Length: 415
Ligand code: 7TS
Image (cartoon, rainbow, N blue to C red; front, side):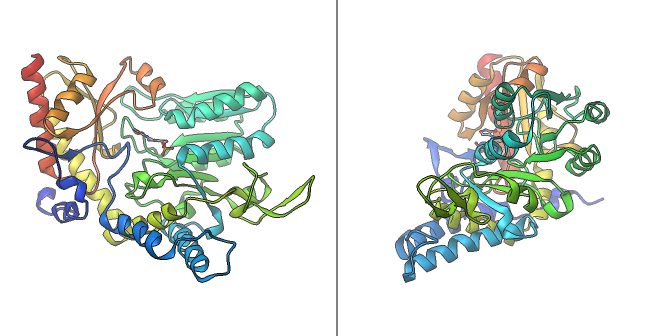
C-alpha cells in the first residue's frame, strides 16, 4: 500500500509562498504556524492584489454610472457573482445574493422568507451543533411569532442522530436549518440525505455552509438545498462579504430585507417597486472591492481544485489525529476520520484551553480557545470550552508537528 503522505494532494510548501503573512515571526525565533482558519483564513497575494488593483485602477460606484470606471467596476463585481455561481454550481448568477457574511445571509432568510411565511405554532428544526449564527436568528423570530424550535440531537461520537431526525420530521417542521460542517467537531453532515428527507416531509432547507464551501467541492444543484449561506473570509477571500444562495422562486416571492438605494425599480413618496434579483436584496452601495477579492479567491481555489483541497485536509487531519491520540490526557471531541473535516478541538487534563492557547502562542502556533460560538454544543458534551486547531490548504505535516511539540510544552509547564 502507498502511504498517502508520500503523495500529497497539494504542494502546501509552495502554496505557503502565496501567503506572505505565513512567513512572519510572531515572537523572537518563533515563526507563525496558523491553525485558526475555521475562524478566518489567510488571504493569498492574488486576492490582495486584485483588491489593490480595483482601488488603484477601477474604483467607482456600480450599477448607476455610465462612465468607463463605473462600467469596469460593475463588470468586475458582477463577474465575481458569475464566478461564484459556477464555483458552487448554482443554476443562475441571480440566485447569488451578496451579504456581509454567513450571519447576515441567515438573518436575511429569517427576516424575509420566514417572517412572512411562518405562522404561530409552526416548527423550525435545527441541530444541537449549530454556530450561534444559525441559532439566535431563529430564537429572535420564534419569540416574536410564537414559533417552536426543535433540535436534531448530536450523538456522543459527534454525529447527527438521523433516526431522531426522522422522528422529528413527523412533527412537520416548515424549515430544517443545519450546518454542513461543524466548526467545533469537524463533523461533515450528510447534507444531501438531510435535504432529501426534509423535502419529502414538505420542509424548506437552509444550509450553513460557512465551514464547507472553503474546504470541499459543493454542488448546489446536486445538493438541492433551498437556501445556502457562506462567508468569503473563510475561503481565502476578504472580510465584509458573504453569500446567500436561494431557490429562484423563493427569492422572487420574498420581500426585501432592507430598503434603500439599488434595491428598487422605482420610488414615489409613499411606495416603491422592488428591483429584480439579485439587486432586490442588496440595498445600498455594496462591498465592491470585497466582491472583486472574492472573485479572485474563487479563481485561486478553482486553480488548486476543491477535490485536492479536501484530500489535502483529510491527509492533514489523519496525521494530526494519529499524533494527538498518542498524547496522554488529551481528548479530541468529534467523530472518526470518515466523517471529519480538518478541525481538531480538544481538552487536556493538565490545563485550561485558554492556557493551552497562550502557551501555543508563545511557540508561534495560533489556535483558538473557547466555545467557538457553539455554546449549546459544549454544554451537550459537558465541557465549558476547547482548544481548536483548524487546518487549511497552506498547512503542512510540519505544522502538525509544531502543534504537538507545543502541546508537550504545555504538559511540561502544567504537568
Ligand atoms: N456558521 C459556522 C458553521 C461558522 O463556523 C461560522 C463562523 C459562522 C456561521 C459565522 O460566520 P460569519 O462569517 O458570519 O461570522 N465561525 C467562526 C469560528 O468557528 N471561529 O470564529 C468564527
